[in-house]
Length: 290
Ligand code: FDA
Image (cartoon, rainbow, N blue to C red):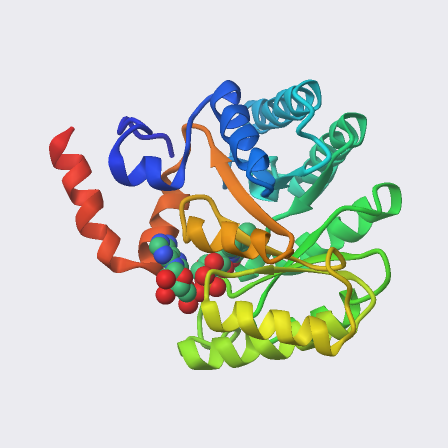
């Protein structure tokens, strides 16, 4: 869904630094200049239009080529939602896999890598299957696991193997109790269980959270597992706890910032507001000030 509220509006700009390739490249350059790594997300999801899926692939190809041109590809990666590249279409699995392959190829040509975002629970199986298929040709392709799903500890065990990159997040979709923990404390406990599995395993854990307790536990579990700096990383979203992002870098940790850009910011912003309802009043003020 595209809306007309300009991305320059206060609350939108806090989470989405721009709409164009040039704007996101400028943001990535500035973050990397401060020692942060980056993951660029071209906003959009749930497309039912083949042309729109094609446009998304081209946007990724363009941003990856621009990253290489500006020397930003090695410390950058891209994050891709499969429903943005066709998963919801008829024959969606084939279309999404083929489109994701093209993005992986563009990333390889640029000297970068791809992580496949995780969406609502109806897409978990097919997303993990597509990641596995991509990894046959592009072994660096990262997966995302949402700690709130009951299944996730098992998924972490299956993915905690040498060469595998796994981003662990709490999970951002409104899921039913039949498949997910809905109590925050239960989600936190599940996050720690999953993190322990990943840190003790052979892969590269990517600890995606702004929660200070999870960051501290992540550091402690990495030490307990005898992990060297760089064999795991922290990740946060653009605009959330920027000082903490830099503090972790100054302590020698690897920190990657997820940078979304583009016109289709609505679904992304709504998930951020749901995580922090006090931001809703800022959003309403942006609408009124328009
Ligand atoms: P929690 O929500 O408990 O927040 C902890 C603290 O962080 C808060 O007290 C506050 O200080 C701060 N904070 C959190 N959210 C904030 C906000 N919106 N605005 C301001 N402050 C905020 N989800 C998913 O389902 N699929 C995916 O592929 C991804 N990908 C992803 C990548 C990366 C790099 C990150 C960091 C996160 C995701 N997520 C995601 C989102 C994730 O599942 C989760 O919804 C958010 O990270 C919020 O959870 P926290 O772990 O930060 O904890």
